[in-house]
Image 1 (cartoon, rainbow, N blue to C red):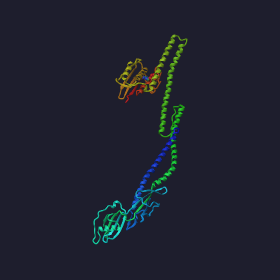
Image 2 (cartoon, rainbow, N blue to C red):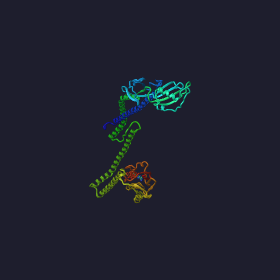
Image 3 (spheres, rainbow, N blue to C red):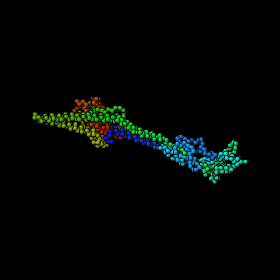
Image 4 (tube, protein in one colour):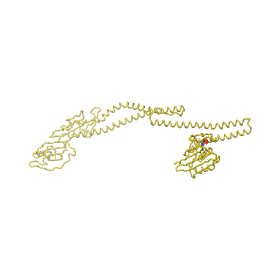
Length: 536
Ligand code: ADP
């Protein structure tokens, strides 16, 4: 798996995921629909059989199946079985197309497979004819009609009835006796449910209703038969189709996922190819090109490009720095070499030799100053980790530097320092910063000029300013003076400087969470400001 390409991995995982989701969904669908439809089918069967059972009764001693009895309804087949005098069940009518056991199975719907593989449920309701209804002429005592049916508990609850008697006719008790006698029921086992006079227009009739637990008519049962799972059987066909289609579907999904992954990875590959060619050619000026869209891949390419931009700037400035540094060192070295050769020549007298040694000494000092300036700058560029910072009195340090600074060219140093200003700082670096600014002001100042040093504090910042009325800086040079080895118009200034002082000032300001700025009018003077932002 480790050596498989990313495209293939994405395609494999996507296919696996799609297959798993499909399988789980189909299984879930089948399971849920099976449970739901089975319950619903059984309930439909039970109520249909019970409804049909209500349509069967004995009328005047003859078994009658009413017209409302449905032999086939909503996918359910019905049969009616009657017990003959020999005690065996005979099918008297019905539409069930299979041979099933002819014994009633009272209780729950039963599963059966009369046809190979096709499952059905059948449900039987046994009718015991426990309720009897008689209509008896109130004058003659003649039975007009009688019926026997099965009744549910609610219909068997005895009702209040009042005793009635007819002149020249029968009374309630006699009507009950006639009915019981005809049905062959005894007063002990029978229970009178109701006696009433329905009120026919032409004759007075007693209606007697009673129940009897002893059977007086042969039992009947109604059977219903329904397909066990119509939905599942349809689903079964669908599933079979799915099983055949699924492999094709998986292949399609895999191909689709692979193409998609390939399309996405193509752009990543293009980034990686560009990066490789930049690396091989060692050309940092090249940029990565990605076609299409403002998406994550373009974002990645942009990030690479801005990284390359920074690297290029950084490498170029390093190159410039090295070449400038070697150039600066080459001049004094060349002078030293020439002076040595001159001092060693047989023609040189002792005073000339001494002159050469003085010159060698000066050049060595210059080189020492350059090397230590380079070292300070390199250290400052390595960040805060190299230096110890502590909350110290910046006012005291600044005042001390100003007090002890020996200016030249009759320049006056004025300082206005607010006391008690504290900064989280490295005192050596801050000393370096202020001394650099003052020495520049002196170096580029005019005879009998002035230097003003100010230190003030505001809510969230501390401002250190060094102003002079010296030669000033041309507007074009202003942005460049912070660069390493940059010297504006070296003919105007003396050659003491290396062009490293302000680069170091800027680094020290940044290390102290600050920034260095300059304002200058050429010929009138310059003002350098370092702002330290207090950390919150
Ligand atoms: P340098 O060692 O040459 O002074 P810096 O980095 O300190 O190097 O300064 C860079 C250049 O900025 C200088 O060469 C000079 O031209 C200009 N500069 C710096 N400070 C002043 C100033 N106070 N007045 C005029 N020019 C200045």
